[in-house]
Image (cartoon, rainbow, N blue to C red; front, side, top):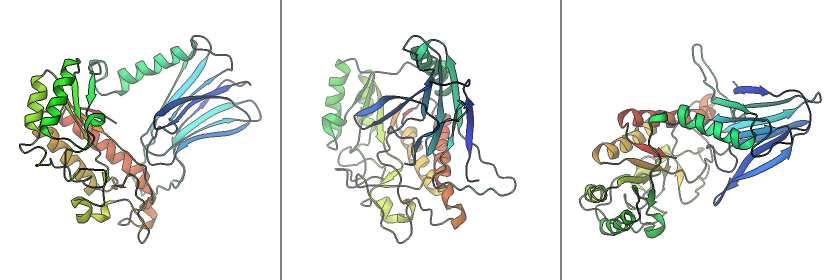
Length: 352
């Protein structure tokens, strides 16, 4: 399989359509772009191995005269956390169509007899009430049908995160002091960010070694969590499961677990490499330590970060013909971890 698209949406034939889509970067996310649709093909995509805030897998099309509260809007969103591609095409015969699914970049998915490949869900809708009504329609659908728990899920709690106050300089006494201040502000969920595990005193070491630092927390996390709970707040924790620092016990034990091409340099970003989550042993390692953290501690929330994209997408222990399956199997295994965590810990909330 060299191309696997989820759906094609055809609009009523006509001219003058306008495309709206979202782009961005750090500290400038979800910037709105409006442009006329002309004959030819416009491609929105991510090749980063992740959905990315650089371009969002969402589109809206109007007849050229819609506003916030008036006009026809056709819109859609692709439900996929890896490489994706959405094309908006206008033919010479004034037919506009939108096609979306797995990105064809570096894509090759051999199927043996009896094997299957599931394409991502591609949801779409229509509103005659402008961009505001379309937005509310999609948000309501996501809350009711997509988000875990649906209508039974709780309203998002007021959250405090320790990062800006302490960065990597975390310890039990300092976090308790922050928690006391947060509680006075009416915070409902206190989240301890980076620096609590392994030799994680800066961003150059420790990623991958997900055990509590005994110098910072001699009695583990229980003392801090009990204190936070005693102040009437839930406790949350920062993790970045898919990443590894070369300066870590995990990397020294399993250098083959990092995504790489044989005999080529491994490009670091933020002093870290990406673990090959397409490997089942890596998947089980990640599920294992997250499950252990959630089972042994009263953790209600994981802040799951992913601070760099994929590079050198090789999969050395697979035959050449199967190595480009990495892009899909990576995401499938990610979803498997999330599903298993939710099933075992139904009160655990996870933010990507």
